Length: 338
Ligand SMILES: Cc1ncc(COP(=O)(O)O)c(C=O)c1O
Image 1 (cartoon, rainbow, N blue to C red):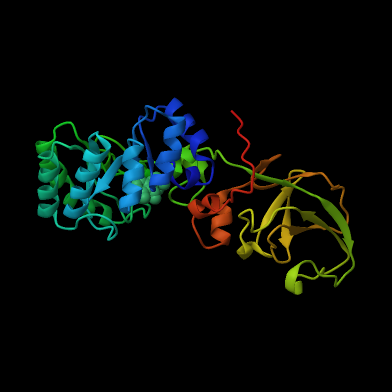
Image 2 (cartoon, rainbow, N blue to C red):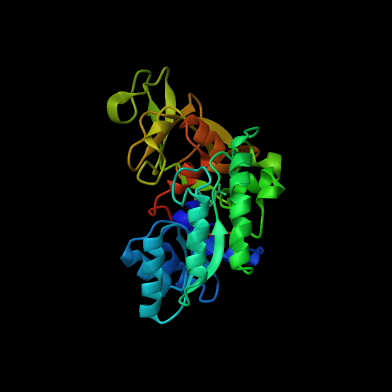
């Protein structure tokens, strides 16, 4: 799963790593993402999971990507577009087994749709699939209900197209219950070494791939009462040193981290103080410091024996690790370390 620029990590480089690691296919949400990936991977099967306008459908099919289908009208459009492009369209029929988002709710109607796909010479019924709403909630019973709704539909579609791929599991379901695996799993977050349950990835032997680095651009003496940043939301409680880092919400360091985060410098945690600006943040280095301009800083990742997890940042922001890494903006150069 390399949608949203590979969960913010960089789609093409993560796709290449995943394929080297054994992934057999790539999946994205949008047609433009498939189009971009196709330039890098001429032969790899790519699946576009999301809703598509006619224009986007053309883009996806022209990139020889598989697409998701759950309505008869869209099936017809796929068929028409396949004729226009001169090659078959590979389609995966989607059951909404309880997510309440994209997909056909009625199992019989979905099987009917699958039958129509199977009977259409311009379409290749390549898959039947669904998506879980609560896989990341340990101990919940809803995933089992969704699974029970999906399994007979998958069987019925497989009878129509014995070679089609049955798939349902995201990372959490993959880790939670083997019964969700079917023919293929659609792992995203765990591939990046992040924990789908929002806990420490190490508990499940996951190793985060991403680190977010900056550096201390300036170190300034602050007298007691002096303030840092917009709105003067922090004032030095005593004479101290403040480090200025050239990274801000324009880079994806969310403003909700104002006075609510820590940054690693020289292997030590320092509090982020003041309001996060678009391009800068400030950290309190304390009354005596040996930190100098140019010192490397880590906002997510390890330095010495300290480590700041995306999951920690997510908890501070009352969000999920997905949003933390997806939010790292294009402005941040991605440096790939093998
Ligand atoms: C339909 C679908 N399948 C699979 C995934 C991958 O989920 P995860 O990153 O939790 O593994 C997503 C991501 O949100 C998704 O939307």
